[in-house]
Image (spheres, rainbow, N blue to C red):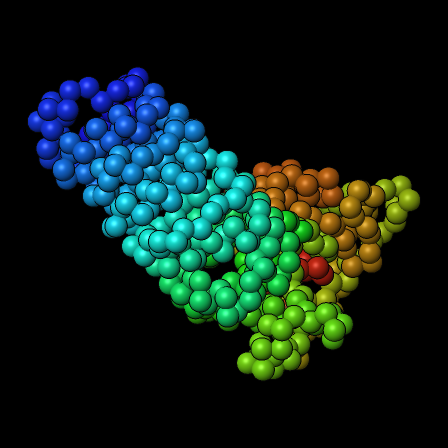
Length: 437
């Protein structure tokens, strides 16, 4: 490959030297030069016998006429790039006539708003890349079908194409081999246009982003609705469509249209109902982790209470296990299962107890209900509990009691552990026990 881009080249120079130095060149990049004459370009090309790829992008070729004798020099080229050259469409037609084995043609940024047909087709062309032009009418696109009957890939992004106007018979006849189409940033705004893509008999890949039709949908809705509308495609916007994704998308499509009036239901809906039947709406389940929980806090020993609750207090605590505090075992709670099952055990504090009136908490006759954050750690919970019980964080041990568990309380001994890992629910209990010295 020989790259001579941005070298300020205006003329061919000595043809003998070109033939000597470029005898084995297969690919030639002459983009971003100052070649303005097809005659000079043909001198270069005619002296490179093995040339298959030619890039003339961003050379000022607007208004330049390509004579038949000059066009013959390009006959061996298979891939031709004429982006941003402003080359006329008549010149393009002449080149396609003179290059019998042309496979790829790039015509981006040339301001085409219309094209003319050719009496001689170019059946060898497989790829037409004609993005960033001004082709808005499908009548112009239709001409590509008759000019390039073997077309496999059509890239038409950024052309503001308004609609696909042909029906099934015409699209099948004009584009019998089209496998991939790119309509990014076109002007399509009807689902009927999307459904017409199904009429291309061999279409497998579609690229359709940035079109007005999809602007009001979420990303998930866009992809699901597109897949459901296009049953034959295997690639959408560059991503493979798996069998499971297709089934999910088609089921989503049915449910998405459940509330539509009968007269507004698309044809594809009836096809999918025949396949899956009428589906019920999915149940809405919030799988986000809980952020807070209301727990009941109990403390052995003295606790704080406001003046409004300055009275002896009895803690009536109902658990699946009775709590018995054995001070001879270093103040660690022991739990003995009652032979007759859960029963209410009443503990009497010998001292006068005082409960606080704190934010996010309320006093009950069975303890103190506290609203705790589940994203905090055990250490942070202990700090919160210091506002409730008359103990410092270093002088307390706390236990989590699951109201539905048959097992005993679990000591919350790891200060860095997050509370949500305990699966704390509303109504569960926290027991605070003072450490013994």
